[in-house]
Length: 168
Image (cartoon, rainbow, N blue to C red; front, side):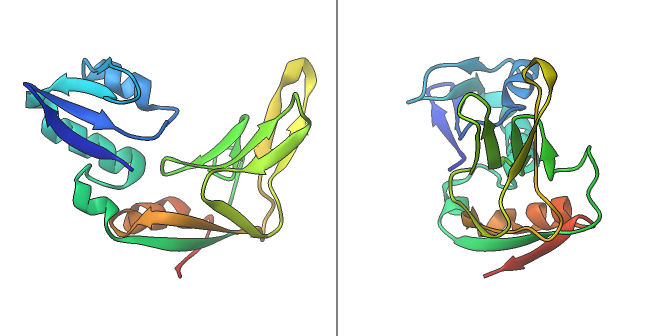
């Protein structure tokens, strides 16, 4: 759940891990204050933080955004390429959700939290020097549970041309 809250003279961002968050937080002069508090920012940055939350997770950081959740079903299509969301390094990410992750030390690839593969499974290519590429084959179908309804349009935009999204 992505939530912005007031903590004294600051705005706190408590959110799940996102691989791009640290760079954005540094740009906005955010400071990490531990898992229980999250990131702290100057209160004047609230509008920028809400825009960042929308960009990364598809929600504005309000508690109401988490109240209405849906399950999404996504089928990957022919439109993907190596710079698209169905191919990643160790992990595949889509709108702040980890879809799949490869664990080279164990030789496995597994779904992300709240992800269920209905047809097909995540795959991994193991290269030289421990290089790993996680990918989904065309026609793979997976479900994402507990997606805020507010984020559906963000997911639709990300998947457009690279898969078919259904709200179930």
